[in-house]
Amino acid sequence: MPALYATADAEALTARVAELIRAGRTSAARPLLAAARHLAPAASTLAELAGRLALREGALDEAREELDAGLSAAPDHPGLRKCRAELRYHLGDLEGAARDAAEAVVLDRTDPVAKALLGLSMLDLGRAADAVACLGEAVAAQPANTAFRQALAAAQEVNGDRDAALNSLLAAIASAPGQIEPRTAAVLLCIRRRDFVRAVALADAACAAGAADACVLGLKGHALSSLGRHDAAAEAYREALKLGPEDLYVRHLVAASGVIPGARRAPPEYLRTVFNGYAERFDVHLVSLGYRMPGLFRAVLLDHPAIARGEHVGPVLDLGCGTGLVGLAIADLPLGPIVGIDLSPRMLNFAAAKEIYGELREADAMAELSDRTRSWPLILAGDVLCYFGDLDPLFEAVHARLEPNGWFVCSMEELLPDHDGTVPGNGDWALQRQGRYAHAIAYVRASAERAGLHFLRLERQTVRYEANAPVPGILAVVQRVRHDG
Image 1: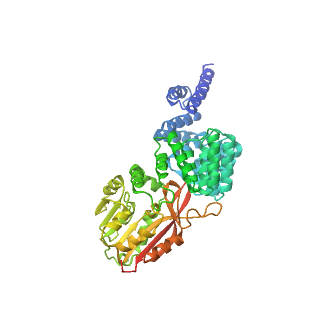
Image 2: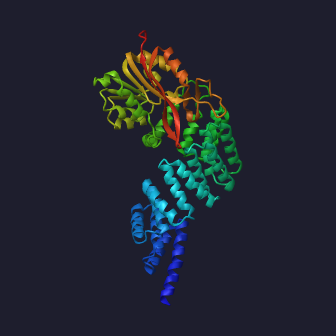
Image 3: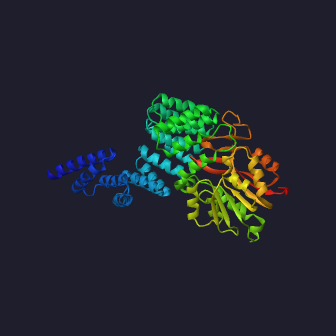
């Protein structure tokens, strides 16, 4: 009889511990877990709960020890496999997470959570088709689970089926109309599809349902601005600021709405404000987006005739140097000293910490090119031209400051047609969301050639990735060939 009571008590305590962990009441769960383990020390379910509790508390090393020990004693326990898959996913061990999740699915083919974990791991491993299959089964098992539907939509988009992705998000909205997350994802997907009309409609529907936050309103502002409805966009940004006054992302959008519609460049004071607030997270954020331009600039410069011969090239002007990502990528090449120019003093502080610049100055790019008589054999501008619409004045100023046969290496975002085939802006350049300009590749060529610059390279490149979608860009290398400036 005492053994029966102990078993009953252990089962009751185990159920209560699981309930408390699900509710997030980890401090209350821990003493009950200890009591349950005293009654049933070898129980695999308790080992799983111990691992899940540690994972919930952020004690990842403890979670690993608990789960490894539990699986050593019970390698065929599906709950332990599933929990360790979740832990490994959090730790970035995607291969290990996929193995454990696959084992959990084999051990319990009815478990949709294990299938979802396997699908997420497959997606991050670049196996989008497998991810769609796994997440599709998870959704079929739990059609009301909006997190599963959102994950399926992400996999479908990466797999190239944006229509299916949008349908998955719309189904998630229908099943949980009060949830903000699937609505945000749907608006963002429409923006990536350049279907700005539908993005606005979805944002309006979210507002009408009382399921809109600062991010939804900010994205609505993006879409409205992309449609040329700048007054309405500014109003959306103001509403976003009311809901998220301390949200740095929202504040960035509100600052961007101050860029005058049709203006030929972003105001310097806007750039200074934005990048002063962005400086501390700039490097980490761009790296997380797969930012490619520093590496591409380095590859271009390796083909420079003098550098290829091992000869020194310098001095070098790095326009809009920011925190020094381009300078860092080329610091070991035979060039320099590198002079960095940027409007943001906080960005310059981070560039100075890298100790790769011979000189750093707080200055506007156009002012630097226009007010000084110094000539340069090499000028760099990594993603600086996205803050200029009309490129003619900039290319003319660059021509005037390049030495004969000097190089100008630059990058920008490419102007593409909208969802309905309409080319935004004036067809040459357009002010897009977040206050950046995009340029048509034909316009870039014509503008530089008007300034007397000769193209050595003009090619389409991916600038970075946003929500797993490539941001189309242009990489250009031009040389001064007209010597009258």
